[in-house]
Length: 130
Image 1: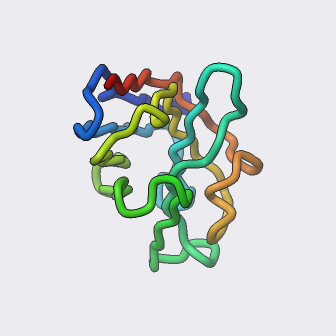
Image 2: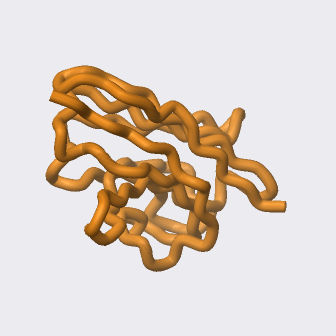
């Protein structure tokens, strides 16, 4: 079975940091783009950061970020462990949301969009308080 297990959420003060982890299993990790998305109450789910290649079976991985998190969030992957990490620094109240990881056969910057992601994790709550 395909599984994406997101963890690491919690309550943090403004300016603090959190590290989210997405553990994947049940599919060939190297062939999929992995993205982090978030959904705040009353808002649509939006892409936060993702990692992908520009060609099928490519090995040159690139990272992409939403403008709102550039310079604060860093996405990285450990293919040997089938795990993707989202390091979130300088957190703001507007970062409060449920964070999801997702996997899909998308290329390039397409990984920042919800479309094309076949598998989704269960979400982990991130709450930033002032």
